[in-house]
Image 1: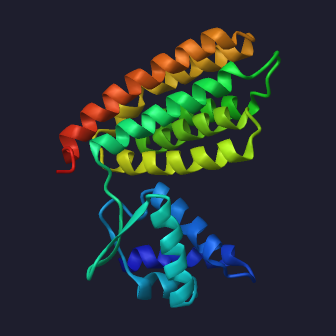
Image 2 (image 1 turned 120 degrees about the vertical axis):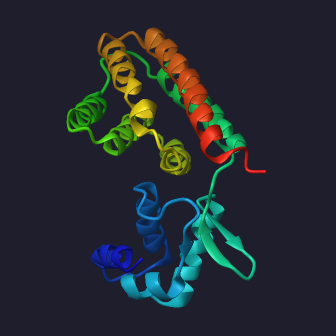
Amino acid sequence: MAERMSGLADDRALLGRTSTAERVADILRSRIAEGFFPPGTRLSEDSIGGALGVSRNTLREAFRLLTHERLLVHELNRGVFVRVLTVEDVEDIYRTRRLVECAVVRGLGEPPYALDGLAGAVAEGRRAAREGDWKAVGTANIHFHQELVALASGERTAELMRRVFAELRLAFHAVDEPQRLHEPYIARNVEILQALEAGDRDTAERLLAAYLDVSLERVGEVYRRRVGDGD
């Protein structure tokens, strides 16, 4: 825990002069997404508040915000913990992804599309795979889909999916077979990118829908075996 707090103290500079609960929540959200605080971890007010140099009230407000986003859970007389998803949570996340991501591709309009972000995420994933860093491959995969959603240029859509992807990372961190989970999606992301580069949004949507169906099946299977159904 001391090592975690030392790393978290490095984020104090990100708070700037306005040490708001929202900024603290942004830092903690990013750290949770990175696996810095794995699912099931109890978050210490004293340790985190000291590392970030913020008041207890500010930290509690940040915890409240992240609880609302379903990243944290408050347990009476025990404290605040990083949430452990159920299989039903994972299924709901993928239903939301299918509804939103496929709609984004369907509504793209006429090509050409601004695909530099997608191409960068593909390159990021390939580079991580060559280095055998499968956690980084998972991160690159999330980046790919964030960039895909960004094609809609909608602030509300981006905000919604930012929260969805943060929840999805909770499932990824509970999986002990990251290569088996993430490696197949490198090629699938390339196929989606190539279809969009060709201006073929119908094929891109079909590939994306198939991708998400397979991903749900794979993540659900691995996650169910790892954590059960939450009962």
